[in-house]
Amino acid sequence: MIDKKDITGIILSGGKSSRMGNDKGFLLYDGKPFVQYSIDALKPLVSRIMIVSNNEDYDVFGLERIEDVIENAGPLAGIYSGLKQSSTTYNLVLSCDIPLISTEILKKLIDAVEGDYEVIQIKSQGKNMPLIALYKKSCEDVFLKLLKDGERRLQFAVNQCKVKNVILNNEEVFFTKNINTPEQLNDILK
Ligand SMILES: Nc1nc2c(ncn2[C@@H]2O[C@H](COP(=O)(O)OP(=O)(O)OP(=O)(O)O)[C@@H](O)[C@H]2O)c(=O)[nH]1
Image 1 (cartoon, rainbow, N blue to C red):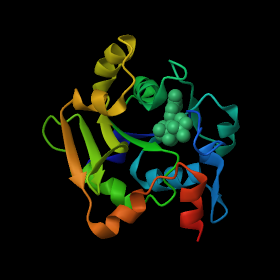
Image 2 (image 1 turned 90 degrees about the vertical axis):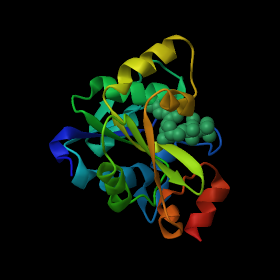
Image 3 (image 1 turned 30 degrees about the horizontal axis):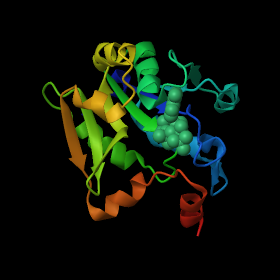
Image 4 (image 1 turned 120 degrees about the vertical axis):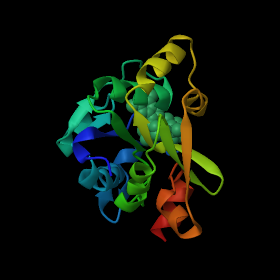
């Protein structure tokens, strides 16, 4: 098991939330903001947590807030901004719209570290989830080059690295549900 001193948590809280209509990180589930679920799941596993967002409202969580180096360029640029500020080899990256996420799921990513894999991502119901994933700091250079070339597709960028998937079983899939629309929010509030 990798020591927590070698792992940074990076939470992406930028973007437009255009499908939801308002900032997803502040939506409430069981009275708690979505982004707090990502923070709580990371806490036992990492030595430092940063929130990548240009929105100062996120300062209320009392964590380090990193501004996007390239604005409005999507999650790939958000991850790049976090990796650039990180000083650890391993970085657990999470979006802020997965309120069911658990530390146990994230532990599976850490346990899967081996050899020269640079990205270890969750695969849930056949779908790759690069926003529930472990990135090596070394991805930073590849991502910067792609961003400079105008690339914005996160999965494309991830695929330029050596990637391993952690496949979840049917019970575990529940914890990775991401909420993009008011309808999806209503579904979990039922
Ligand atoms: N820091 C940062 N995070 C981002 C950026 N774009 C998206 N994200 C985050 O990446 C995760 C996935 O975002 P998406 O749902 O794909 O995009 P979105 O812009 O938030 O929402 P839509 O406009 O509905 O697509 C969320 O946690 C967002 O907060 C960005 O430009 N910078």
